[in-house]
Image (cartoon, rainbow, N blue to C red; front, side, top):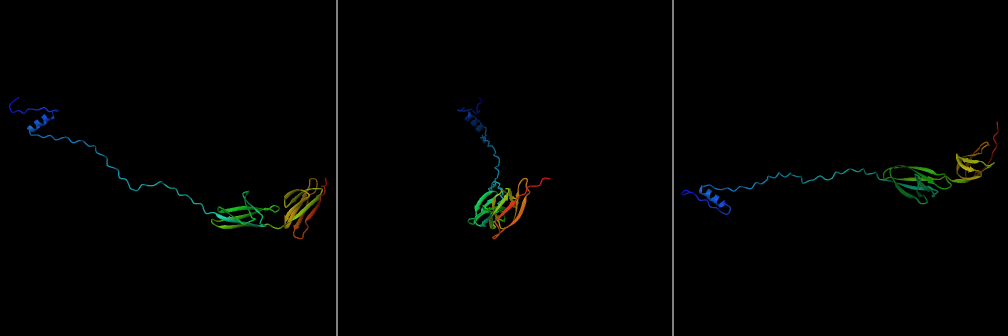
Amino acid sequence: QAAGAPVQEQGAGGQEGVEAIDSAQGGSIVPERPQIAEEAPAKRTSPFTPGPKTRSVAVPPPAGTVRFSSFPPLADVYLDGERIGNTQQVFEKEFPPGEHVFTFSIPGYRSAEVRVSLDPGETASAHHRFPPFRSFTITARPFGRVLVDGTDYGDTPQTIKLSYGEHRVQVTKEGYRPEELTITIGRDTKNSAHFELNKEEKE
């Protein structure tokens, strides 16, 4: 090599020689900076997160109360064919607002319907006074079919409990003229009626 020329010294990895040459030439080595991947800016989130959606639920109107009683206090009370109590003691029950039809029934008496129009939260009364009655016996010769106020009670003789007031009694038999009588039931009236049936005349 020419005199005065720098001599390259070999280090373990050859790097020290390179640095020596560059130093001799008056240069400097700048180490490379590691490349850092740029991160995407974080999304800003609101501290308030919306909760689950709720649906409004319609609140039904409050129920009303019906107080039941009768005279005589022996009636079974029915609603839509289902027995709901007996008036031997006054009793109360709750029902939704609207119109309700209750049936009062005592054996031997005519059943009665009682209509109640009930408002929300209201207390209403359902009371029925059964009219007094008497037993009435109907006979016929020959025997026939008995109808009282249009209700069929079967063949004579019949003893029927009838409420005070007027009633229409009919006795019919095939081949005989029907007979009809209006009776009045009261405290001092007769308690029986007899019918004589006559054959129909053939033309």
